[in-house]
Length: 396
Image 1 (tube, rainbow, N blue to C red):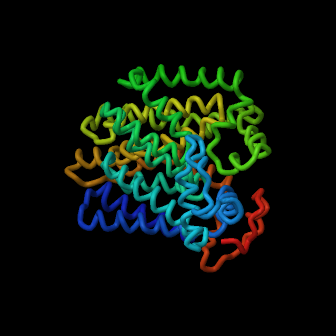
Image 2: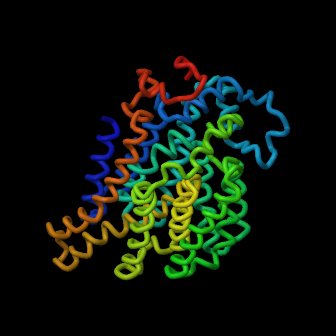
Image 3: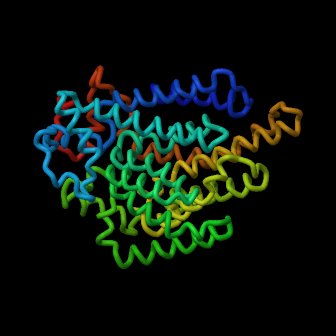
């Protein structure tokens, strides 16, 4: 119920502010939604498969500050997240304090980034909530903290401020080393992403690169996995490599998990460049194309979905731009009043994408629904069956 109430609130704000263009109290409501999302993630109780692995690590393997070893600062040890855990543990805090810190860090920076680059902030938040919110806040906690730092590093790449971008990527890498891969990708492929046509060829090339990498290096790709479960031990590593095989990767998989996230962002980028060339979101066009390219790689190498998550916010922003522009452009033709026809066009466009996103949520339904908080600590035994962990239910 808590998820539904937040979604209904956001949809009301989409209509009032993004479609109708109202501005009164816009920032207040934006911050209200931000606070609600932080509290939902911060107060969660055993939601998300990776959460219970983080939980076990917090109570059983993370040392207090006085017992930290010098090798913590090795480049590949990802020390910042461990330091946060160690600091909270040293002060005697429970694990949900770590959840609050992560949720606040990720969502505050993400909301700031959306506001910086999107004209339709509530629509972006809507797609974020139904697509990436549970991943960023209830699964990939370390990677998500790296992700939001990397977003601002990408801005410096686009501005060719290489020192600032490198420093931010290093900070992101101290949360999770995947950021170093993204830094190389952003710099190496930057010259290839100057326009949409180059981006199309880049995406096609990325698809075949994915096939080559999968065929020749598939057994080692688990080293790039960003989930907590895959970093705990080698057994979990090998278990996660099941994501990389091609079994079950049929035509339906392509149409449901890959094609929509190539077609919708590509069409949205084309539409925005044609009908709203002054849009703020076009400032990050190269990153949008990078996101589409990683989706193309995912078509041939499933593990690449981890990198898709790092660029998902760019795909969200460009799709939000297109959907609202469809309504607002019709409004301008009708002297500022939205028509039934304009809503129908936007509705028809968004329904297939919504069906795909909702289907994806249903696949992992029991991980997040029903909602349980640290206040009432209800145990969902169907959810517990999905978890491969040693964390006890009384540890929080």
